[in-house]
Length: 127
Image 1 (cartoon, rainbow, N blue to C red):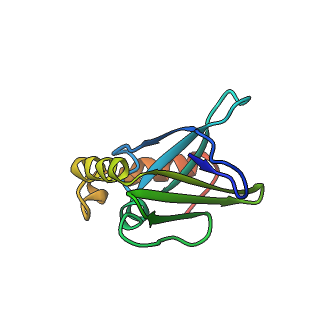
Image 2: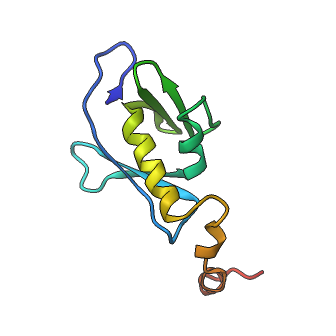
Image 3: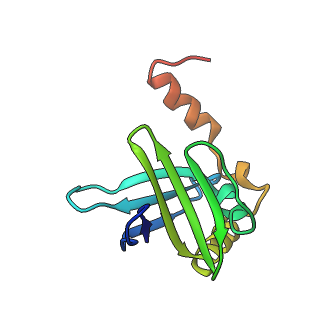
């Protein structure tokens, strides 16, 4: 649900995804009426996990528990702010599956540093 200040909450289609190719991050994809592609926010998997227990995050993404088994995800950008509420049980289940794929502390096992450096060099960057 998109929580709009001073208005009723609006149902919204959003999905979280996790991939071992970016083991530190989760992607929140939000479908907005009138746009062909979803708006995506990428942020730390650890932030989402910590936000299940206490308010976490500064800057663009904040995650915090609410009463009645709800999690609030607040997003900020130069274009505006949005707050989303969703089930804490669903978020906890997602986080558990992500940590089952790549346990905490094992993220570097899934990084291909050589390929990342090659991509940087191909883009004109050098170390």
